[in-house]
Amino acid sequence: MAQQRNKTLPANVLAYNRKLPSGKQQTYYSYVFPDGKRRSIGSDLEGAIKVGNLLNERTAPIRLEKVQQGYLTRKSKILSGNPAFKDVGKAFLRDRGKGLKPRTIDNRKEHVAHATTAFGNKPIQGITTYDLAKFLTKRTPCAHKAHRGTLNLLWKYAINTGLAHENPVDNTEIMLQPPRQRHRHTWDGYQAILAQAEPWLAHAMEIALHSVQRRSDLTSMKWKAVDMNKQLVHVKQIKTGTYLAIEMSNALYKAFSWFDNSPLECPYVVHRKPNRKTQQLVDAIRQGRQHVYEVTPDALTRAFSQARERSGYYNHLHPEERPAFHDLRALGMFALGKAGYPLAYIQALAGHADTKMTTLYLEGHETVQPQSVAAGNLDDVDWSNINWSTPLAPELVNILD
Image 1 (cartoon, helix red, strand yellow):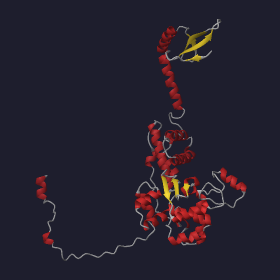
Image 2 (cartoon, one colour):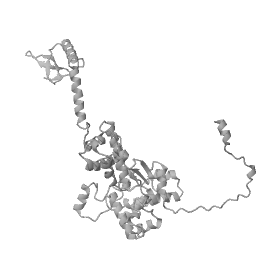
Image 3 (cartoon, helix red, strand yellow):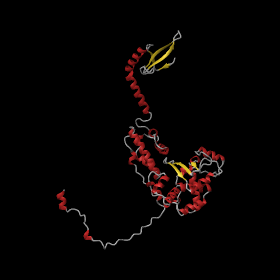
């Protein structure tokens, strides 16, 4: 018995065909009541329409009540009363994650996960400024700022959805970023590390210096985005989503060519053959690596730090003050400035949204030198020929006011 809906039928009225003893097909109609039960209303089309419209009028209040109850039930599963922080966190990530960049979504998930570990089943309205301050002060200034920003958005979401009455994050202290600890690279320091680096690392350093790309963008570069004939590399920056088509300089082309001529088959530009057992390589792939020869951002930083320590060039500095692989980006930008390239060019190559960030990268390489100036001679000034701008006398001020 096949059921069907006819466009001319009222809502909740269904038509179905039934085979008669004579072998012919007869169309019958039934009405679906709010409780889901169906009742036959005959085989006459006009009669079915009249009965259907009449029953719809009678059952409309019941259907509306059921719809409202169902809506409130669905709503209450996530957002009702004074829910636990973990439930609000899930709702926040779901409802406020649309249209965001993947990196932003991942960061928010991480921040909410940390806060869920701390607060979990605690009701959202029971979390105080003191609780949040204790949670935030355990983090570094950079992490403090990031976590505080996400929690602030989460509580605003809770207020907007009626789950909280106030935002305890507002009253937490904003931790100021401490002055930069790491020193900038010098050219001699770069050369000293380059001399101690393994060949793959040395050429990765050259790519970093001449392209001024971030380490995550370097390690994610694939050969399918490189045209060695045209000496062109396409980059989509992971952090900003900025697309770049970088024309290679001679030095950059030379560094790419070394990896291009490598005997290792790898889809990634920066790659190496690690000295590890097969099982360790399999475990590494399970942990997120896509290829056995792939170099992760952390592995790149570790290899660079080891070469830096072997060089001994920065041993006079505290370990936390010694420049890292990321600082090659700043050295490359500084070198471009010294080579005469305009700020706008350096900004575009770096993928910065504004010149303010580019300027920060350029600073700190050179010691500020005093400008040589001479005190002027005031003996030749004709003081009598100056029309001084003087304030009004007190009596004039009173009159004019």
